[in-house]
Amino acid sequence: MARPKVKKMAVINTKKIFPPKADFRPKTDQPPAGAKNSGGNCAKWLAKEISGKIPVVVSHGFLNGSAHIFTNQINETGKTFCTRFPIPELNHHLMEGLQFPKENKKLLYFVFLESKIYPKRIRQRFEITKKVLTKNKIKFAAHELTAKDVASAITEAMVFSNFTTFYMAMLQKVDPAKVPWVDYFKKELDK
Image (cartoon, rainbow, N blue to C red; front, side):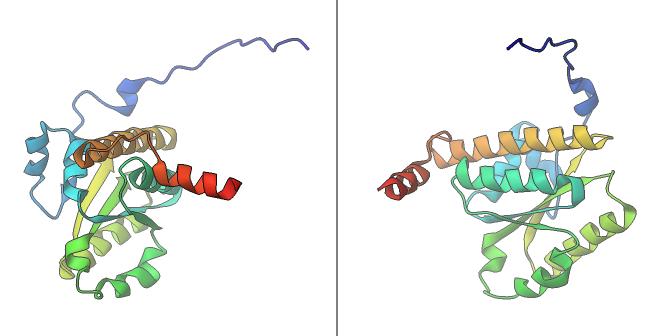
């Protein structure tokens, strides 16, 4: 069988994804100066912020897949329990569950994956959701993607999540590549 010939290979222009003057510091309920303690590195800053917390990743539409992967990476690479919720689903039930247990104020930390590409009504939902979190005294950070198209936004979200979870593993002093509980599970399953 003959191999198909490759005619052309695409190259991603990283200058479009990460403009030279992009500000990657997240908008948060805390002063954004927190990123300065990490040399302006937003992924490192977020890793420090969510260390010891239960992250809740929030997204919409085309970024839901990226949020799913981010959550998986936080679990597997960052060795931290994490969950995710898409907007608008989150607005129909989750907000009522913020009150209890009382420890939610100390444990939960919402991470919003935001984009200017989102429809106006969805962006409004994100802002109102942050107000609800503030009223419930629950911390959050909003990572505003700078990409102007869907494919670039997905790529940017993936790069951000890769670095964030790598820094989480470093903070936990664990090898991000090792998955002992997954390995154990697979061995038990093979018995």
